[in-house]
Amino acid sequence: MSVASSIVSHLESFPRLRTLHGPTPLDEACALSRHLGGPRIFLKRDDLTPAGLGGNKVRKLEFILGKAIAEGYDTIIACGGYQSNLARITAAMGARAGLQVELVLGGVPGEPHPVSANLLLDHLLGANIHLVETEPRWDFGTTIEDLAERLVKQGRRPMMMPLGGSSPEGMASYVLATAEMMQQFAENKIAPEHLYVGVGSGGTYSGLVLGECNLKPSYHVTGVSVSRTSEFLVEKVIDETTRAQEILSLPKTPKASDLTVFDDQIGAHYGAMTEAAEEAIHLLARLEGVLVDPVYSAKCLAGLIDHIRTGRIDKDDTVVFLHTGGTPALFAYDPAVLVPELRV
Ligand SMILES: Cc1ncc(COP(=O)(O)O)c(C=O)c1O
Image 1 (cartoon, rainbow, N blue to C red):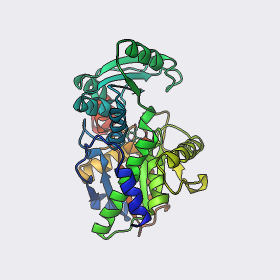
Image 2 (cartoon, protein in one colour; image 1 turned 90 degrees about the vertical axis):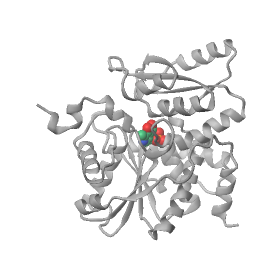
Image 3 (cartoon, protein in one colour; image 1 turned 90 degrees about the horizontal axis):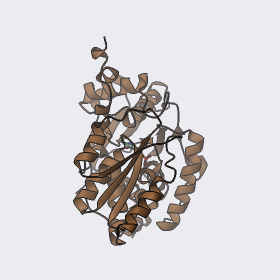
Image 4 (cartoon, rainbow, N blue to C red; image 1 turned 180 degrees about the vertical axis):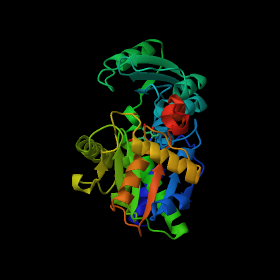
């Protein structure tokens, strides 16, 4: 058995809440390519994963919730922003698995939080929702520990979801996604030089770089940050992949010099619309009929478009854009922010 297949079969043996029933599509975006004057662009459609309207977190939660169930937890506490995609998908997969889901959702003081988009879906999916103000943004203070304590007193067994679902088990899912893509590249007779992914907590990117150094796909992974500086993320990813390598028994882990993360697409703040994200949303929608959101996927696509125009990606290269989902967040925006034709 090759090293790659023994890694895959080892990770396949982990407890898992099976939700995906096969690979997500890999679609060529020919019109977008033509518009940009090359390279070949493929969309890896992880926005189409089958739980709670989809997204990258479904793969991670197959492993994180699988482990929680195997260890006898009956309640999941997840935290994030008011419009968290992780929260929505935890609510959906938790409902299906019969787990009680407690969502601690925060935003900076004064940030509006109408019950729409992801927050509406969290309610529909039956999660218990706790809204808090966080300053700085991701600082939940003792809210989560206090909630866990109350739940234990009520006789529950709560498991704390790591922020962003960024845990070694979550990363395992994107090592396996690497193997899935390598199989699709072989079927399509392509050898992409680049894979682009949006980076929030860094868990998806970490899984992909662990996949890159252990399974050796043709591509190098480029991360596009939506909130934090590259320097901060590189340090975080090195720490977390080093820990994951041990827990997942992987032969290799990346060095800081192996990582490529850009932080020039964030704009004014996390979630802020930018001109480049607006263009990315319109190009993909109007040329390919595919939707991306301003918080994550449009910012990553904007980075990719910029790198095509500035020559970091060669016209003869092949590039894969990992569509991580997040499209329900579109409904949280003022239509005039999204659609120029609606501006007065
Ligand atoms: C739609 C979407 N894309 C990308 C990401 C980034 O993933 P990660 O937190 O693993 O870096 C997230 C995280 O919330 C997300 O919701």
